[in-house]
Image (tube, rainbow, N blue to C red):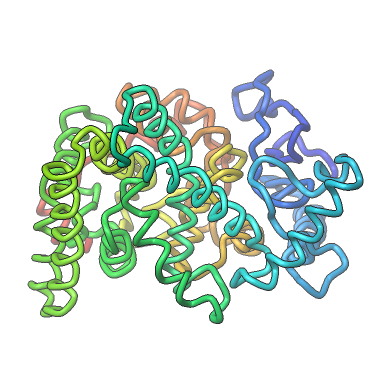
Length: 436
């Protein structure tokens, strides 16, 4: 482990609990088992210290350890097999179970695109042995019961976060399985996406071909810049626009850009999905359709915008075009464990094709750049809770969750809160023309 520093925030091993240093204003808070990854720790420690020699030595040591965990040729390599348990936890199992899991891992590494990603095959097996059979049974003649239907929806609600971030990897990397399994890699989203609330291919067209092109700028249909990000009315307008109009706005966006083929595809898959759901509702079983397709769709449409609001709520008033200053990083949060390091949003915008296990390494390697660019790093709070705290205007709480870097280290808690407040202000059309 690295030497302790009172200015450091630990992102620590699962099951190990530490307190936040007093400088961060929350002495005594106990951190959860949150870090995603196969090793004791994903990010050993974020150091905000003026002791450059210790900092450099500690960072290099941690970077080497993290890189070894991702390197299939290294003795320390560990794939991620489950989101709940790490490899050290599996070592405690009875020998027969250990042998079975080791055999599964060896086989899975030959199937997944990146050998660290055994967990994605694990979850595909989970979905095809629970979600798919449950949905099929509900549509069977005389099978539907409200108890089963609601329990199915609750199960899908539990799955959807992890599934969505698995698909996030899928759409950015062109798949999650080896090329020899191209047929299944391309087919399964058409089965599982609607079960989780995704319409066919819309995530790809909106997120990859639109959001990452516009980068939360004025042309981004999910941009936050024209909204006051701590006002409930603005938030409801933001969610409502996506909820009710994205089906038309996304194809029209591509049309205005001269991408007519992409506009046609986006409209076809979105409206085609609605048509199939409508046919199932009217001609097969409306109750099963409600629980299997409609409720997950309505829930996810809200969830996606709640998350995106949190991801892009803090936009720098001086340089809003900077990826460092228009997105944030979350460390030491459960969503990094269960959702493939989704908290490293700045790292993702800097390189959308960066593998999820590489985000912690990249953060440490570019730590000085993050500080120089006035990036925002939070700990022990996820995007949904950031949205909730913003709508409550609880900047004091958000300031306590901030991990100060660079000039932020010298700020008082009140100064940090005011800095965060400035970054949630609406951009006027004059501001938009001047800064974008």
